[in-house]
Image (tube, rainbow, N blue to C red; front, side):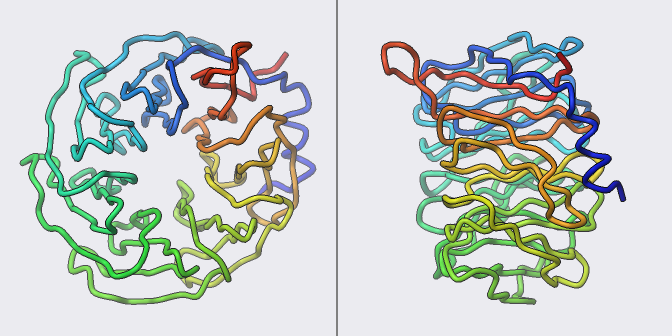
Length: 315
């Protein structure tokens, strides 16, 4: 493990975040594909934008249109660099092929979708809707395998790296852990005194992190399911989290006018990224210390700027 001081040195020459025009309205979600050559963004404007990373800058490659409502979350296939899935309020999940720049499939769902997760083995997509119904989609057959209704507020969903457990954060401050594929309750962990908003697993499989409405983020041992430490530097609900490729850094963001970047081993602050507005999505590059994110920022006319930002490029 690298200590916080060693990590700080990495960002000594990091310049200001670079802005890239992406959408005509607020950007809800950003995600890198598995080889780090593409970044996708989903927006309230119903579109999906794909950028190509060329050296240290983003170049807009294509805009996918077809959703009839806001694109709230998106996720790339864990090992196929061209396959992208999007969840929308229009009661569909859509699969896109970034190489051919075409829609690959539309899967109808029972509600307005707000979260999505692709299983580490690539075979299944889980999508959750506003009514706390989670649907499991078979990627190959492009159909829903099963719908599971929960009696609590389901905020975000994820598998562990081994694909053997399915995690959900709840509105009551719990982490609910189910066996997979059986979806039988294994653990119901009281994690925070307030709503657990987001959950993220680190790429190495050692840890996962949870962000809460109590402005705390907690880092957990993924095998023991024990809390390693909490970070309490933010003043607002923690909306989004991302681990760096090596599992050493954790970025957390909220309505605070900064993104907090901490050392996973200790929780100590490594650096911050100043922002001008609330930040709702962050994503570390899969092999570099490059952070993509999007804020609720406005242009000179006080309209949504719709920009995607990139930080970590040396000046």
